[in-house]
Amino acid sequence: MLYVRISDDPEGLEKGVDRQEADCRAFAESHGYVVERVFRENDTSAFKQRTITLPSGEKVRRVVRPGFRAMLQFLAQRGADAMIAYDLDRAVRDPRDLEDLIDAKVLYGFGVKSTTGSLRLDNDSDIAMARVLVAMANKSSADTARRVARASKQQAIEGRWHGGRAPYGYRMGDSTLYIVPEHAALVREACERVLAGESLYVITRTWNERGERTQNNVGWSEKGLAQVLRNPALKGTRIYRPALPDGSYAAEPEVTTEGNWTPTIDPDTWQQVVDVLDARKARRTTWPGAGSVKRVHPFSGIIRCGKCGTIMRKQGKVYICVGCVKLRRRSLCGFQAAVAVWA
Image 1 (cartoon, rainbow, N blue to C red):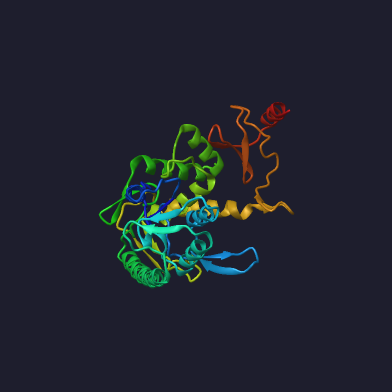
Image 2 (cartoon, rainbow, N blue to C red):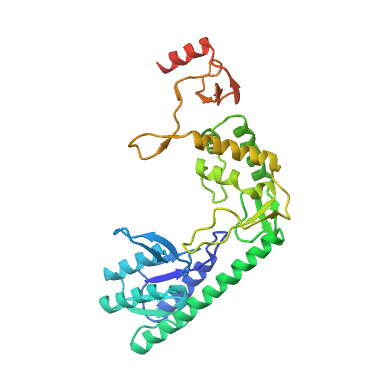
């Protein structure tokens, strides 16, 4: 059984874990092992902790690695005679994870190997050395995280993009952002349609019908589109929000500066769109006992446009036709036609 992991893969190409898997397979073959299963964790940190709630209700800080936990369960079921990783720090960088791996090995008797020879748990000396190396690796990760946070803050002060995955509508290059014309056109279209009264549901539905895709090459969702439109990078603003002890980020930015890239939309338009989205969120009502948030409007989903037959949605004191993409007041004949279609 193989385990491969890489911490950062913003482009999602998985080249790092592919290389690790190839080396681990070669190692397994040279030592007479047959690979039955491969556990891959791409773009997954073995150091960063999150605050989670245990079934008992207790809140604790843990490194969340579903693939690593699935691997331990597989080994507990005696699914393999040995675990092979590329290197010690690819398998574990957190002392708790190492102790869980040691416990599993003691209980179920599988071997633990690495292609670099840095991970062995065959005897007490190997285990003691692994603990020392993991403690050193953990300290190195903490030092790196501190330096990266300070560098990110300085980049924000200078108006430079922090690196990593570019926001939708842009691509990364030369420490700045460059507009992707076809994506920027969708952002502007969404802004126009939101300001015209259309819902995010309607926009994402029509985009998906047209075959539009997100940066991750998946269909659009209301939540995903809202996140895109709320991103201040669209108006050319660079912000920096420090990480909090619980692993989340501060609600209010510590640094707000003008970015060194071309805005996709002007600041006034961005603010108008955000205000509309905030107003819609504020109007939502929670049904008693429903456990979810729903928007409540009279005749929602019933009234249809008397011209094109498309469902109309209430916006303020008027109804909007999502087919004609413009506001129209509900007329008697339109209402009668709507009732007839609905009936």
